[in-house]
Image (cartoon, rainbow, N blue to C red; front, side):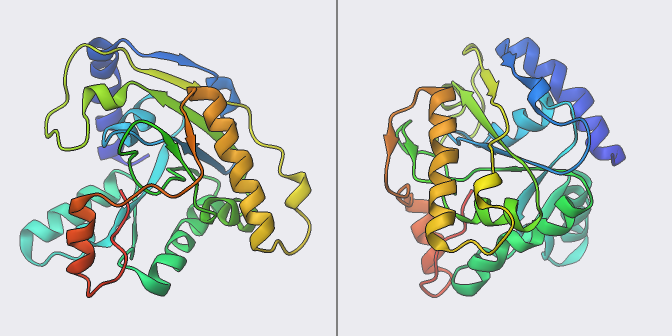
Amino acid sequence: MSALYAVGKFAISPMSRLLWRPKISGLDNVPATGPAILASNHQSVIDSVLMGAFMPRNVYFLAKDEYFVAPGVKGTVMRNVMYGLNQIPVDRSGGRASLMALDAALPVLRAGHVLGIFPEGTRSPDGRLYRGRPGVAKLALDAPAPIIPIGIMNTEKIQPIGASVPRLGPTVEVRVGEPLDLSQWQGGEVDSRGLRELTLKLMNAIQQLTGQEYVARYAPKRPDQIAAANGHNGTAAPAD
């Protein structure tokens, strides 16, 4: 654990418990050792912060590579902070770069660490659970690593899309489900249909934890993501 991550977890975990009185269940489903993927629904920018604060192990997350390449002293500081907080730089500007982005997490999993990820690829715009992207399933099979579904509730009330400051009051609930049985897809090449089947299994498990209405299509891009896409010559906007 880096010193910065340790300090952050030491400070954020008790503060979060004080401010939002979280109800946490199923932590024993997170393996004590070895690689694992924590796959959660995504309703607020603070989801990754809370997941990292409450999990018994250090959690790595994917982050846009723009945070790692800024020039000058400010860029150096930001880059060191991001690495210190277990953030993995990925190019999510679109095209083939987006397709290959999750490969950046393979070394982390193969080193026996825990990866936190949001299969929807972006925050839900309306509280519903949207179709998951198959990259998570491919990553789990390539590593290989177990997938543990996570359900996080009420964070959209704490910091909804567009809000810059978290609100006080709402109680957060984090439910950690049992690892998915991946045996059906292991031991050979898995085609796109198999990845879609595994992804649907994952999203069904998350839906059972959260009770959200499921939408069988990808979450629509928000206006800020569309603007970012225009800034990348028409390629897909980076996900949250």
